[in-house]
Image 1: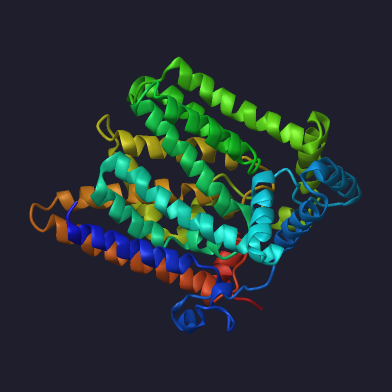
Image 2 (image 1 turned 90 degrees about the vertical axis):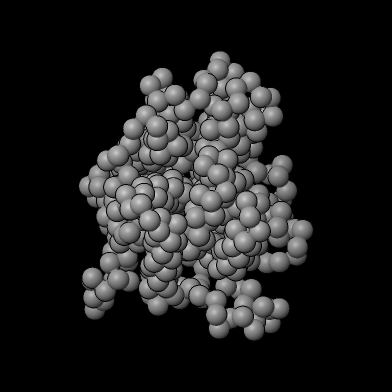
Length: 415
């Protein structure tokens, strides 16, 4: 990789990091206050309901310690039994624990700690995306994907709010990358151990781990025909062992399998009685496509276009497409459980497929292929950043639901 290309990648990463810094870093008292004028500050700047719950859980851990975590879970069960609607359970341990650790180490207020954790893991996801694609297709593809991920609207949005979904995306992407590496280098102990640990931590992060796991099973099955790599018995065992290990740790943390079952059962069943979920969390199977079209229209169209030219030689594209399709199949069938926040883990695969289509379209023309790719990426990144500004800077967007996206884009007019 030439020095100019390395410099370009560094500039892209620097811009991506800057855009992901939490809005509070640019307050009047903060060291970066002078940069507030050029940072796209989100219009929605107050804590949401879920964020307050995370703060409450982390404060309880701070006061009572981890030994009292089963009591915290039991208190949730008793509270949830009395409520008509669902509230998020404290089984999203890794995010809650991360907020608590950040608060304890750096002395910031607990909610501010969660904001900083969300920002940090969005930055880590950007770096991980570059590393993943570099290993997959080389440095030039990694640089191009870095540009697309640096300004991805939903990535930037999740970096500015103390919600678990951007944090979850990092662990889901890490699992997907380590799965690929194990296919390429079978029986390498380090890759295998990392994969098991990443899967266990994914289970400790959020119940959406199941969507990722189903996608991994689909990729294992598809490997018989598409030959992504070598499926070994060790990899099959690791794919089961990771979730099992994470599940055992979660059971120990919450105080038993009965408590864990009650948490999930109450959270799911009460969701059917939550008016907000009923009004915003339902729709046809193609709802995620509609929402993605509203947020990142060009990326989605290019990614869909790439599907029509998949062949045996396009193994990385197949890998990304199957991951999206298999997890999509489960996610689009959840009654009152659809939200574009949950699709945050598709941002990298979608942009990889979009880039693949751009490269293919440019290859049709014999001359100026490099210039066409650079020009296309420039237009695409500018469009993506403009979408973020429209959705989250000019409009107070918080939840990534169809109604709010339509209002932000002025397709629906607010009364």
